[in-house]
Image (cartoon, rainbow, N blue to C red):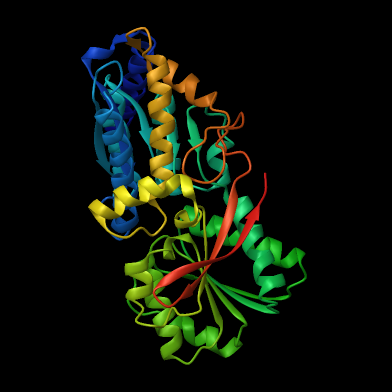
Length: 386
């Protein structure tokens, strides 16, 4: 009975705020953007890189006069990578009638858990990393991505493993979460289509400190490549270190969470040398349009790993959408949502123009494959696709 009451109140809450979102509010009453993501916990490092990049974009806008003379406020919504906490953040953001858009959530499990809430209150969301294909296949109109989906990343990684690394055998390990299982499923399906017949699969526990049991099984098969799907760098660091300690010589290929200089390259103490990873963002240091952003970020927060640039890009898109919506001194969430959905050829810092399709997916996204060389990630291949 209690659960039914809570659910009923939540539904009423959603529809109430959905109704008021259609009324224009005076811009002078306040303009806010929410940042939803893992700002504490195992994924705090990439999470804070995203948050700090959003802050740089908003600070730049405010320094230039804001929107109609009103400064934009950034509101942090820490979900710690947990779906239940993500729901709490979504409810908080939906309840704030001066908050007009959300950047995030970047994790697929949290994005999946909050789709209905954000959709119910007409609050547009641009994720910087959530890549599970199902997120934009449910008919919601408020959800957008500035990154490619797993059904692009997975095949790209599989082709690289089979064609570039010429692997005849692959051992696939994955944590039990929406992103990791979805990504590795895509890789395995494509490897099979490419004729790779020796494929083994196992699941691992996120946050574990000892993977020796599963790695003993890996060693017995002597694969050419070990592919690890895990959301955070610390899990991949433990894995690659223990692989080398056990004498496993297979090429290590990690999913996007491993693109962290401190928590993967430095923490592995040399074990990650030669490892490959895939990622949704380019090598920002090679893009001229990103030079001022890089200078601003490094001057205030230190080195970049790659998670921040899409956050900066998403913020710029949202700020432009809010400014257009507020041109007459009034603003609604629905206007901001419509302006975001109409984004076409937005030129920012990612090295390619941003456009969204009718589902909210990025048109022409790419998968970037990096190799660990010394203390950095070296871009070795860009796989493009629709």
